[in-house]
Length: 362
Image 1 (cartoon, helix red, strand yellow):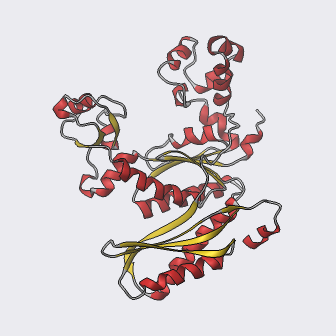
Image 2 (cartoon, rainbow, N blue to C red; image 1 turned 60 degrees about the vertical axis):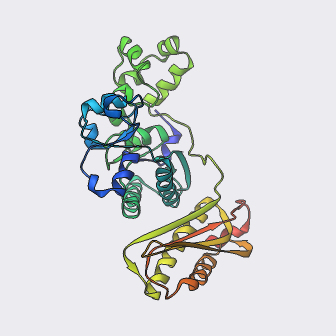
Image 3 (cartoon, helix red, strand yellow; image 1 turned 135 degrees about the vertical axis):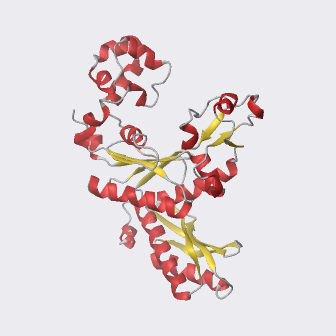
């Protein structure tokens, strides 16, 4: 099966039990306990559903979309928390900004999922695996959360792979491993094949992805119409969809929270050098220049400030980021210890590939 799309390297990052994991991060005393986020169970009389739950709760048979009354009967002693979307969106934004830095092209598909196309900056799957581990380490270090990552030649394979070894998993599917990975799996592992379609496929004698992949496509068309063609392609690991930004990139930023608060000027300078390097790398990959530099400062007592400066003209100069960030930081020098520092750029302008200004990146 010759498939040019398999020459690409795609990552699918899926946060592990996102809502409940964020809640446990905010309440460390809940670690290791069943936590359920959703509607108020009202002592078993609630009418809503479970939004998500911790893996400890899943081991008790609880799952997303389960009626909250049923969850309460299974585990009345669990901790039940209301959905706090503002908290989850704040965590999501930080995680997505962190991951954007590593990608040639980036597509956020939900509050806790994203695709990264790394084909232009990574040469092989060994390097891709190392990059995926780096992303997992950065998300854990900076946000205190785990994620599972699938590395594969296209989006459908990467998504199935990210779900293969949860939680905190990393699954790599190389082009020559596609059939060995996919074919033994149940057809329900293909996104979109759910409770309605699976029984119909089972009636046709199809239970595994391999059986679907080798089924006469005309029989699938007769039963499902054009959807049968799509299912047959996905079962064979064929997916031509590209990783695409869903909305215009308005800013690029990164930040670092320190295990121990810092105050030494040399240490602060080194942090800004590192953060500026990461932001500049992302600019280079995405072909942007910038006009505004912003810093974020958080003191040990959680007082948080941002400062920004707009340059006279748009540029791609890394030193402009560093110098402007350090200049903005002078306002806070000697005023306390810092638990977090961040750097961002905005007022972005897309660079035409034909422009010689691309040379400024290197």
